[in-house]
Length: 310
Length: 313
Image 1 (cartoon, chains in turn cyan, orange):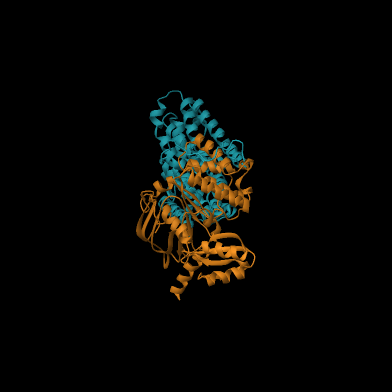
Image 2 (spheres, each protein chain N blue to C red):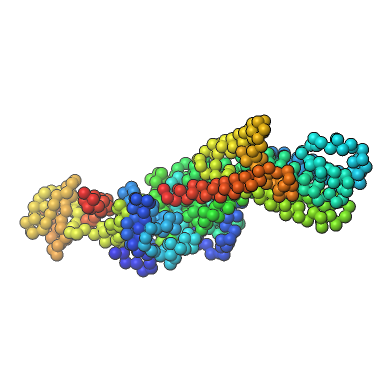
């Protein structure tokens, strides 16, 4: 017996409200995930592109007066095959009036930041964080421990989802917002805020469009198995096979972004950042995710309710 | 029926169907303070009854109050005041023992630092020593049982539901756990519902018993009343000629049976035990023990189950 053993004593204190009960689950998930060395490495590497994009924004704002001179030295025929599929029209606008084109230039910079490095980092990160979240609870029969407490299944889902959202926001929303504020701070005058105030909102919407459906699908995979490695496998299989299928179709002259999660979410983001002319099959992609996201949450809800009925 | 000073659970005509299977059939039940044993064969509906009480599954028909809250509508309020120890080998992966108990406390609304303090205090009470800093997945079954018990009481619940609390425990730990439960009931005033197959556990600590068979309540009674035999008798163990004593008692008009190991079973009557002392003295037989006979819980349980089988056939 412990020398400090005081026997059983009652507890009289003020309990926290129900509103933030989900946060306990989220916090626990975040702390548990943070113990993974791989996760910390991925987070570290996922911030490297932000430095590159930061340098680009720096260059844009510090050398904005040179664009017009630069434009005069570039023949119009050179304005093709630009990197990152930069629209020629945008380049012309930047050359003609870099101040006026600032909003579109920043928006495109942030769009490419989301589309290129961060969506790949996001897929890897979710593949690491989400699969154990529910699969392990299934394996260790932890549901009764949770639901015998004053929390609802919705709060459980919210807590688990927030764990994933937290890490994904760390590599998408947070660096993108920092990039925006860096650009504002580097610009010559604060009046740029009047032109670019909508970008943080677009960023948040784009983050939500990227994070919410992917989290739903990843947690759905996690809830379908007791072995988190199977859930990881399923998750990466969907992303890799989707991309392979997209490229096969593309090679045959058909562009079907809906077959690849990365591509279909990218098409939606092009619209969100104000470049609908660059997007393809937006309606199909939006419809696909509008169906898949609630369906994934519904399956998830059913799976976590199942042990109660056993 | 149980005489209850304070009605804590009052279920009225609860029915629960899982598609075509009826798990609970018109269950009406009143549970008061003290320790109640919930008995029943496998598939009797014990776990379903607990889940209905906790609001984890919605009953198909019927109504009920648990700690004054409606079981159909106020599940969250009920769960805030109830501690539940599941039967399954449940734990939360990746947490140490103390982290898991603290986590359970926080889920029940204890503030973060207070939850940690309380977790340590309860683990001390439950006899979990330095192992509390090890990850739960490395625990033995017995250790996990103790941890499950700890998480069920960490938030100071008014009512405890323990599902097979002693399974997987060695005899010493089993006794310690039963003693803790008794202490919680007697000193801290907790009401306890124990669902178990281990009848000696129930006999040892319970005040009342509920026997559930095929989704129906067969027996609801205090253990004291249940243990009282229909024909009260005395079990007499003697040193000397038990046969002669038996004959002499019979000759005096007493009803005597020879039980195993030379024990005599003498029906209680107005002349007992004086007649016994007299006959023993006359025959020079020493009475080593004299105990009133009691119905064994096993016999009561088997009788309840047998009745159901009889009805089915």
